[in-house]
Length: 95
Length: 309
Image 1 (cartoon, rainbow over the protein chains, first blue to last red):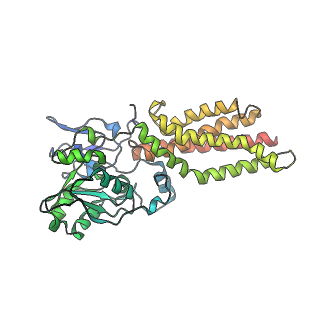
Image 2 (tube, each protein chain N blue to C red):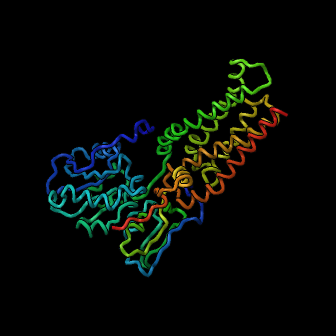
């Protein structure tokens, strides 16, 4: 089924030098965007990424980065009219 | 419930729950305190013995709570410590739903508590097989789908969410119906505002119900564009039925306003979908929102000018 969203907008970035090939990012991605094989890690389907941030969040080597947020028009509307941080402009919580 | 009636008050207390007769060796599953998720899990796992660690997500489901950060590393770590999970089980593995991964950093949980996070399948119904296979799931069960049925159960919420604005619009149409050169009578106003009212409700239905249902088969990628196309079809259908006796100005307004309304409601479905990104929706909105506003304003002006000139 042709359920893909807009082309060439996704902020997903990969630092192949930092990657330890642990495979965690491929484990958490619900769209199979990333893949690890003999050649290392690479982005299989960039446009399928929904920027949920699970890969970056679970990368111990900080090799994957993405501006994570929720692809929801309502949430973006709220952000336009509100100043306080919401899901789409929160900083990543580091503990 | 799913339709939003008292949904915000639909939670179970956070904490550790036992399903069946769990022992020190039984698996530990983690979930949100949204009652629908909790009940679904209990149903899928009935007959098994395991621990269920429920996080405080304020009655929000795993995926949305992970996006907000309440189903997150900090809450998980503090909940593990609060229930003293290390004393309850001998092993050091916890199973999280895969959709919780955007809120939880597995390696940080391990550092803070010693527990290893395993991400399970997306759907609760795949859990029994996951547990049977030694906490392994297939590639297939790691991919999210957005089926016809998924979209069908989500659309009623869209209609419920639109009732307030719809009431305002219908009232406005009623008032417009009263602003006629004809003699004022309640019946006359009602009959004059009936067609516009029905056309509006049709546009709402097209945008928040029909477009989501037919999503994969409508050309284009932006939700608003998909909605606008079906809205245009509805405007055309209305122009030869409900609005067949309208003036040229009103017909122009119809073709400007109806697709814009459908586009707006279709765009609001982005949040329900499983494949839209923040960057994508921002890009869509940067274009769609001004166009929608412009289209509705132009349509409104045409309508008013047509009535009074």
